[in-house]
Image (tube, rainbow, N blue to C red; front, side, top):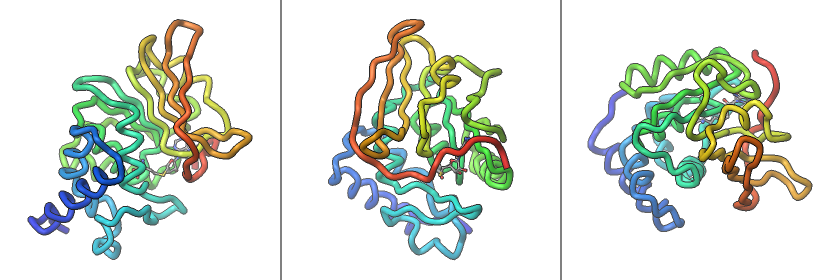
Amino acid sequence: MNDTPRHATLRRRLAEQLYAKGIKNTKVLNAIANVPRHLFMSSTLEPFAYNDNAYPIGADQTISQPWTVAYQTELLNPQEGEKVLEIGTGSGYQSAVLACCGASVYSVERIRELSESAQKRLASLNYKVQCKYGDGYEGWVEMAPFDKIIVTAGASEIPQNLLMQCKIGGSIVIPVQEKSGLRMVRLARVSETNFSKEDFGTCAFVPMLKGIM
Ligand code: SAH
C-alpha cells in the first residue's frame, strides 16, 4: 500500500478534529497530520484508518484511537532529542508519532509477532525507533535512564522498574488501575525518591500483562 495525497488530506482533517476535541499542542497535531496511520493497520481496514477509533492489529490487540495517542503525547510533551521509552509498541503508530515530535524513541512489546512487524514497518518508513521484544514491567535497563516514559496499556500498578528508569526531572504518563477504575496519570520525578502525581481522569486501554509471549 502507498501513501497518497488523498491520505494526506484525511490526516489533516483528523488533526483538525482532534484540535476541536481539545488537543492544542502544535507538534502533536503536526505529527498526526504526518504519520500515515493506514500503513500501521491491515489493508482491509484502510478505509477506516483516519477515523478516530481503535482497530484490531492481531494477537487480540488494538492500534490506539488517534485521540488517545494525541492526548498521551500532549501529556508527555516530548522535546527534540529527548530519550523516550514507550511500553506497548503494538502497531508502532504511537512510536512514530513520538519520533515525529523529535524524540529519540525506545519501545518495548511483549508479543513477539507484533514487535517484529512493528520494527520492520518503522524501519521501512524511516522512523528512528529502537524496538525490543520483552516485558515492559522491566523497562529497558540497558538504555536507561529516560527523560520520559509512556505506557500504552492499562497497568494494575505503577511498575517500580519504570520509576527507577526515569531521570530526575523527567515524567511518566501511564494508565493505572485505581479503586475508581483505570485512570490516566502523570508522574514527575522530583528527586531520587519523590514523585508528584497528577490525575487526568478515566480512560480505556488493553491490559498491561506480565511476561512475554
Ligand atoms: N502503542 C500501540 C498501542 C498498542 S495496544 C499502538 O500505537 O499501536 C497496547 C500494547 O501493549 C499491546 O500491543 C500489548 O501487547 C502491549 N503490552 C501489554 N502489556 C505489555 C508489557 N508488559 N510489556 C510490553 N508490552 C505490553
